[in-house]
Length: 350
Ligand code: PMP
Image (cartoon, rainbow, N blue to C red; front, side, top):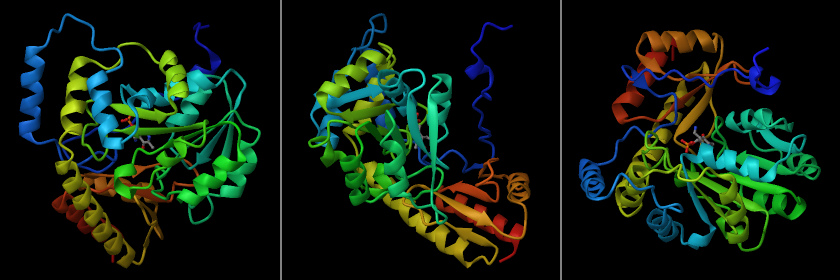
C-alpha cells in the first residue's frame, strides 16, 4: 500500500529524451533562441523590480500585451505556467470524476494523462486513415460528453481542422470544446472569431513553439470572460512568476522577429517535406506545423530512430500501435534539417 491513487499508480512517468549534445529535433521546440537584445532588456527590467513581492496575480501587463497581439479583450485571457497548466486548469474547472471526455488519437498525450489522473471516462476518436479528423464521429461521440479537447493542428500528425469543421462541431455539441492552437502561428487558422458566438469554446495557445520560449513556461487561454473567470479559479494562484511575465511581455511587444522565424521554419518544413517525399521508403504526412510525421517502410522505425541517434540526430519515436512504424521530426535550422535528411538517406537509401 502506497497511499497513492490507483489511477496515478498506473501511469508511466512522463518521459522524453532531452539530449542537447545532438541535433535535437524531438520536442517541437523552436531552433532559434530569442535575440540577445531582448534577453538583456528582460534582465535589466528584472533587476529593477522587487523579488520579495508576489507577482501580479493576473499578469496584467503580459495579459494586455497578449490582448494587443490577439485583438481579444483581456478579461477573456488567462496566462499560465505553460499551456499544460492551462489544460490542467480547464480539466479541473470543467470535469468531475466519471465525466466523459473526448480526445483524438493519435493526439497530444497530456490530455488523456490528466483525464486518467482525474478518473474521467476517456472516449478516443481515431483520426482517419490519412490522419485527417473524422468530424462526424467526433460530433457523434462528443454529444454525450462533458468536454471535447483536441489540438488543431494536431500533435503528432501535423494535420488540422478547417474553420468549417470547427463551426460544424460547435453547432452540434453542447459540452465544452477546447481547441489547443499550440501551433497556430504556423497555420494561422484560429477559431477565435467563434468566441463571440459560442459560449462553450476555449482556445489555448503557447509561447513554447513559434515564440521560442519553451524553457520559460508560458501559455494562455482565450474564452468568453464569464468562462475565463471560472477557469481562473481552478488555476493555482501565482504560478507565473515575475521573470516569466517580463519575458512574455517583452517578446509579445517584439513579434517581428517571430514572424521571420516562422517564415524560415515554414520554408524549412516544405523543403524537408519534398526531400522526404522523394525517398522511396519514406511517406511523409502533410503538416501545417513545425514538425513532420513520416512513415518508414521496409525497415523498423525504431531501428531507424536508433541509427539516427547514433549519428547524433534525435527525432521522436512513439511506441503506440498506430504510430510505431512512423517517426516525427521537428523542423530545425537549415544545417540541422540537412544533417537529418543526409543521415536518414544513408540509413534508408533514397
Ligand atoms: N499542446 C500541444 C498540442 C503541444 O504539442 C504542446 C507541446 N508539445 C503543448 C500543448 C504544451 O505546451 P507548453 O510548453 O506550453 O506546456
